[in-house]
Image (cartoon, rainbow, N blue to C red; front, top):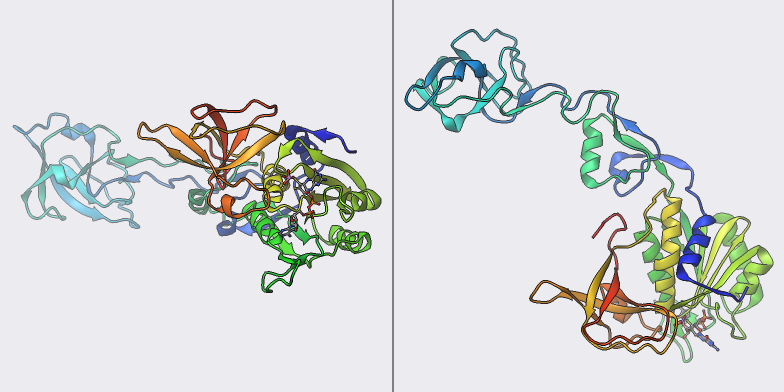
Amino acid sequence: MSEMISLEEARALVLSHVRPLPVETVPVLEAVGRVAAADLASDIDIAPFAHSAMDGFAVRASELAEASPESPVELDVIAEVAAGDVFEGVIGAGQCVRIMTGAPLPADADAVVKYEVVNAVSGDGKPGSRVAFRAPADARANVREAGEEARAGEVVVGRGEVVGTAGVGFLASCGITEMPTYRRPRVAVIAIGSELVAPTEVPAPGKIRNSNSYALAACAQAAGAVPVVLPIVEDTHEALAAAVRDAAASYDFVVTSGGASNGDFDFIKPVVEELGQLLMTTVNMRPGKAQTFGLVDGTPVFGLPGNPAAAYVGFEMIVRPALRKMQGFSRFERPVVKARLSTDAKKRDPRRIFLRSTLSKDEAGDYVVTPAKNQSSGLFGPIQRSNCMAILPEGLESRTAGSVVECVLLDVSEEIVL
Ligand SMILES: Nc1nc2c(c(=O)[nH]1)N[C@H]1C(S)=C(S)[C@@H](COP(=O)(O)OP(=O)(O)OC[C@H]3O[C@@H](n4cnc5c(N)ncnc54)[C@H](O)[C@@H]3O)O[C@H]1N2
Ligand code: MOO
């Protein structure tokens, strides 16, 4: 189990051990960014009736066929119909109806001419006036048709579709106020390390603040999960075994950080092996080689490395896809763009390297990427100031300034294709 596997293998392995969680029904406002767990159908036609797209006059287009600036066609305005009203009268020859945007198209009319191109011959354009049309109108001009967007019973959001902010409005128009979706995974976040103290404390000599739990909880939340930061666990086999056993029994996913390497006080691997099945220990990437994965009582347990950047990259590249799959998502790749390196990038380690970097555009509009000067895996600051990770593939080939590398965009949804 000390075998080093590729990032792709690691991701596939973890994904193969998780599945979408049970379905819950949420109000549509809480469905934003979530996956529909069933086909959703409209109860009515959308739009429910043909209506005007303009404030103007509802006409029979055939009556205006000969209209021109030289010989305008004049019609009598016999009524006015506002949005929310219905005109149920008859429009006879030589007549039209003043109509507002959103009002149902009268049965006898087949086009709407907007105010701006109509002149009053007598009156002010309201009922009782006579108005002149100086151009023909196409049949159905300025008419939004019934059922233009959907027919009653038609599926408007399919199973597996991610609902966006506009989608919430679309569902509302279709009479759908609740949506079945996959439950958000509850994620236990456990920091391992006898050196760790809470961020509220000023660390005594030899101690440091637990920052990983907060970054990882934030990452879990950003992935749509519900994180719970559990107490720090000291570096003993017994303490860690108890914490992992309890967490695995109560949560959908357990994420630990620290104690993942081969030091005298690194216990996550033996603990997972003892409590369940150890499935993975090392991944060919940097930062973050020591990535432990296994199952405890069927619950996925992921042991991230202790170094902050290594924990962060492991979460982003492997844990996040798993948490997304549990919520029914099917896209797991963050958008990647190609960019020219602004500086040389030496490759001294054959692992795939993720350089925390800043992506920008030059004057020509082409992407340029600048790796953070300090690539220490012990730091969160360079990631806070980065917007991507530039990838140096496996091997020892260094890159010179100007060479093109792929960059994974941070904090950009997998649903976006660039
Ligand atoms: N002999 C070797 N030693 C190490 C190797 C190696 O290959 N051979 N790899 C190094 C790398 S790279 C990493 S990453 C770490 C991974 O090991 P651990 O997961 O056991 O990490 P720890 O030793 O527990 O911690 C590493 C570092 O990170 C700090 N840390 C831990 N937890 C937190 C936290 N919650 N918040 C903030 N900082 C944390 C910890 O104090 C250490 O400084 O192993 C290397 N060693
Ligand atoms: O796992 Mo370490 O860099 O590779 O931080």
